[in-house]
Length: 393
Image 1 (cartoon, rainbow, N blue to C red):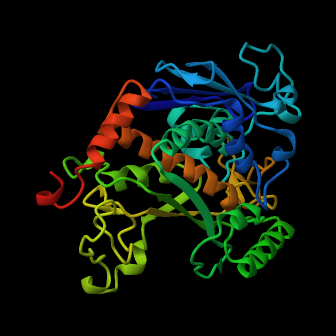
Image 2 (cartoon, rainbow, N blue to C red):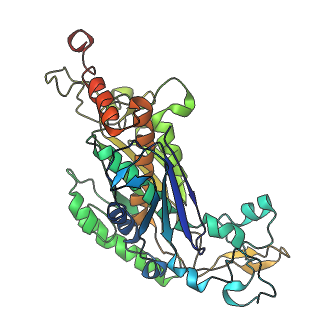
Image 3 (tube, rainbow, N blue to C red):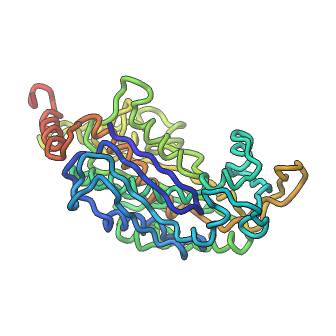
């Protein structure tokens, strides 16, 4: 069983990650994880927190001499900003704590954030008890966990990428093929340079107005073997698992596999991907299109998995919206705390991590193995069978 958990608050001492079920013998390092963490911290529209944190993963357990042991992998990420929040976020009780600055109790509720439902659900009188864990800072832990999953999938030829499709109403034109190096160099991670310039301008305009903007991001997983996931039960369908994982990212409000809403007005003959006659025994079941987004019936179909998600404008505004006070219910301006203007560029990196974690889970569900060589044998044996029944069995 492959599973993972995170712990930690935005301004606490740090974040913790535990991964269980990673096969023994996989090479992994803090430097490798650090590459993914650095990608998450880049992107136009980020806030001042990125100037403070320089995320560095510290592997605590589950790895020896650069190889996984098959035991749980423990990773920590230090919050460098903790030095400024030691009293406000102290684990131990603090007597006579002042109500000034960071220590002040938060009661001004932000529309669009977890503040109100979280305070009601857990009975809190201080919204900070909610916003610290609901913060997108937690996604750094997901990226660290996802880096391990990406590393595992690399062993079997699976590669993940992401790019920004829209920001603030500015949409990129389709680019084929996508130059992934150019995407990494783009300030907004967009494959269309002209649209990228207009996206930057949209972010600047929102920042000047004390506002925020959202966007659309696409994650692509290439070389995913056919048959991950299953049609057997609703909760094991691969597309459903990917959708849930992406929807769990902070501020995500919509997910589609492939074109999604774009196909609902078309006829079936315009939507489904025609299967080509098998001419290459090493690459059976080819298609000219990928409108299904790489899944059929809850399983991977051998084509690239393409998942899009929409991230709403961030709820923390420099020019706050009207709201109410948690104590009195009277009108106030919503709470403001240091925040980004746009999260779409780093959201792609987070999306890659979440898709990788789902695929790693489905991959090990299908092929198993307590060690990497065992998993590889199972994978290679299976791949020899995925062709026309009378020719490949």
